Length: 126
Image (cartoon, rainbow, N blue to C red; front, side):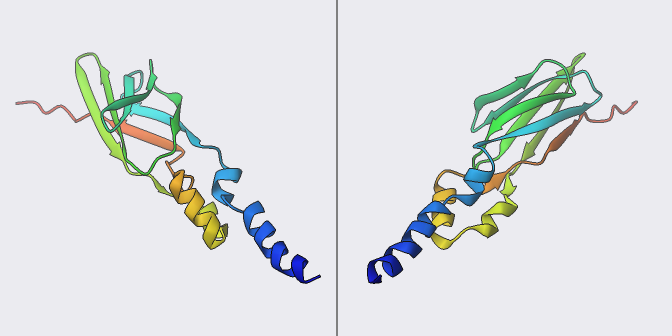
């Protein structure tokens, strides 16, 4: 009986570890839009390609990470760019302290917004 009292909390903590990672996968599916629409976009993280969409709007799958993503879009000689910093996944608050450590290590505690809009600069007439 004493062994059960000692092992049960440990087993429960292990079973509930990584709550945000278990509920959400290791990536975010993000709707990528641009203004004007129809632009080709490239998503990078730390100057490494992560995803690409041939024509906005489109859906891109971006691996979760604590580092920001840079989005570069172009159409008809015009360009637009945006940097998005991942926020915290609300599921991380359901973690036990040991699970929080696990989620932090695998960046399961981070998430990107469901939709990102890249606006091109407004042309000014001289």
